[in-house]
Image 1 (cartoon, rainbow, N blue to C red):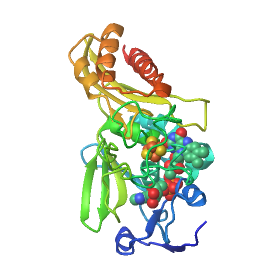
Image 2 (image 1 turned 45 degrees about the horizontal axis):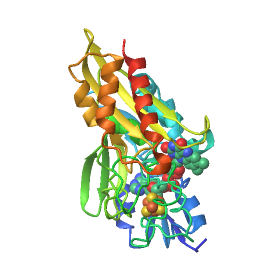
Image 3 (image 1 turned 135 degrees about the vertical axis):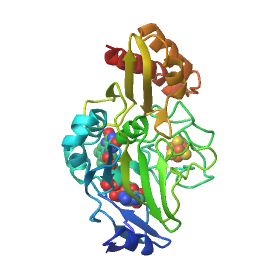
Length: 323
Ligand SMILES: Cc1cc2nc3c(=O)[nH]c(=O)nc-3n(C[C@H](O)[C@H](O)[C@H](O)COP(=O)(O)OP(=O)(O)OC[C@H]3O[C@@H](n4cnc5c(N)ncnc54)[C@H](O)[C@@H]3O)c2cc1C
Ligand code: SF4
């Protein structure tokens, strides 16, 4: 591993002031340190933000909840307010990684973890995300776990966070402070599609620090997070779905669907949502809406299985949520 300096910030403002080219913020380190060991990330300086006083989960006016960026994944999933009012979020967090990793991983770091594309993690191979312009071997090679929606000729990577999928369905807001000041980024919206700049995972600028995630009041209806993976724990999603369904008098009054494991972003299934609102809450309607969404899919030969997998998962989840 390349030698690096280590410093600890005492406040968000000190962290932003202390940020310079070659610096990377350090959360729990469960992704960044792995990437440093692999030579994928080579910061000259780590600025530890994991002990900033941003570790509270607090009720806010307007029935909102603010989750600090350094809250550990375990504490988020175990918090009584999250468990009782946002069970889909608790379930998504618990579906990720392992107990040991979740004890250390932070909310901010979870949102900014990098893709698990095998070529991205192998510095002996080209990769447009790691080395822009070097090519994307995944397109002709191993793309079985990669994107079927919103991919580009430059990159077909997927975003790996389960938490981000639930936050996208809930319409959470990400609070950021940085050299350009403070701003609030609605989810989905933090992450970006690869286009011809796959090296940029998010809309954040250098030095931007995530300080919190704010949850709006829980949407009416029942909610669920379901994840399909190759083994029952310690595995990233092949496809996951975070769904909220509000049915009144047999008709869909509200619906939110976000997908994980299928795109470079947590994918909000807006076409399916629009197709469902106002219509009957039946299996046939769920199937038609899902197919309208997945018409946009552009799978590669070895990940085409994700399209029927996503369709079946969405339909089964909505059927489970329907009264
Ligand atoms: C074996 C294994 C299996 C896993 N399985 C899953 C899974 O199934 N689902 C899932 O969702 N996750 C999974 N994870 C990922 C795990 O959840 C992430 O590693 C973790 O959430 C990252 O959090 P961290 O605080 O350790 O981030 P770090 O590794 O410290 O940082 C990650 C990135 O975020 C940046 N950063 C950190 N905090 C901030 C901040 N406040 N503001 C701005 N930038 C910041 C860092 O600079 C870095 O670029 C797995 C991890 C491992 C090791
Ligand atoms: S899919 Fe993206 S991350 Fe993977 S090799 Fe291609 S450019 Fe790199």
